[in-house]
Image (cartoon, rainbow, N blue to C red; front, side, top):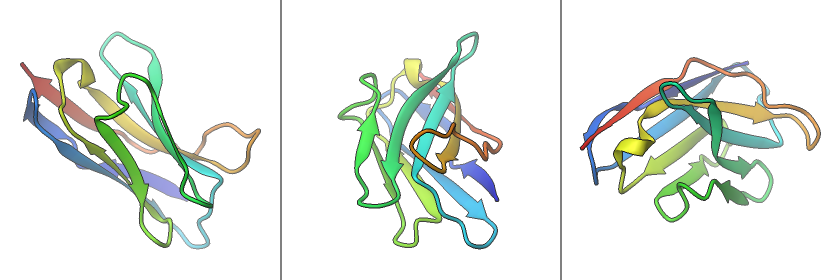
Length: 118
């Protein structure tokens, strides 16, 4: 199974973007889907996650109240709605999934670049 993030682009500060994470392959299931980002010169960091069962969500403090993670009914496509973007949100955004509580995130796909201009 491969994941492909899309929806990035150039946006002015204060603007919004919606990222998508699409899974290819059959019988795709997971414990948790997460979004991460890597800003220029920085380490990859956690952004948000959603549990496959129940749909509970988790957010990094830096994006709480501005970003919303969701998924479609089948759980094969995830979304990250990003509002009130600021230049510090500029990064390549990636999605990945955990198969279980103690397993690492995997199925990393190519990311999508988000650039926020001031």
